Length: 201
Image (tube, rainbow, N blue to C red):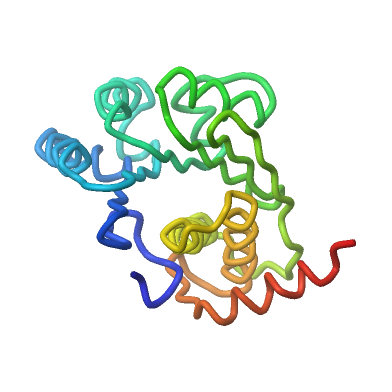
């Protein structure tokens, strides 16, 4: 398992969780083929981050590649604005995660929404988690921090609400640091999670 909660989204987080990114697909046809082969051969839950960057390829090419790849994916992570660009989706975030899960037969879809938190679909149920307010210094690493914390919780067997809370906590802490890769200690995230839970009625 990862020692810190932020990492590039092309890594193996745990022996049972292979996580790859759409940015990898854009590098070359060989990279795309290799990504697909890794996901199909992986044991356990297979997670994929959409990771769409318009400067690397266009949305039409991305969608074509994903159509072949997503049947091998169990859990899809995506930033809200990237989903809109690639899948040309409409509707509320709740509707979007449900649509993607249904259309691509995904067990879990997790949509990060920056300062608006996150929305997830899992086994027919929609889950929502508000963002945690912080004094933002740099938002570049928040999505990756969210994924790192989320995967750590999934590997530990946490329920979806607990998973999302840890994800937004890691994202909030990441926004207080500079740079796209902001290492966070799990203890820092746990303290913020505990403080949020203590405020609940």
